[in-house]
Image 1 (tube, rainbow, N blue to C red):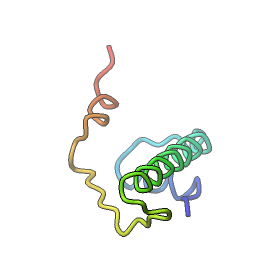
Image 2: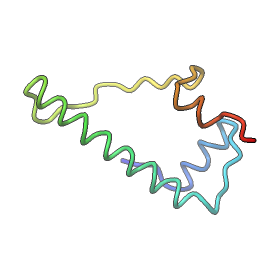
Image 3: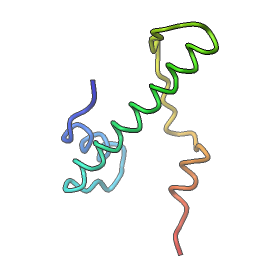
Image 4: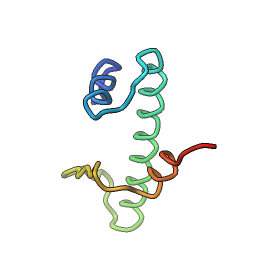
Length: 79
């Protein structure tokens, strides 16, 4: 279900990020925890708003070329 550390590393490199192979266990662990918490919240919203007990993700639309507010904060120059 989730990418391995090697798959995550390769994807980051392919997308042009300067990925640190040593940090991958931690990066993947954080990535997976965020995904699990987000899905838990989606399930709760679907239950409360639409009375759906087991929602399914029909599709996922990634838009890496579009800048999100959180991405803007992360990529902000420090100084």
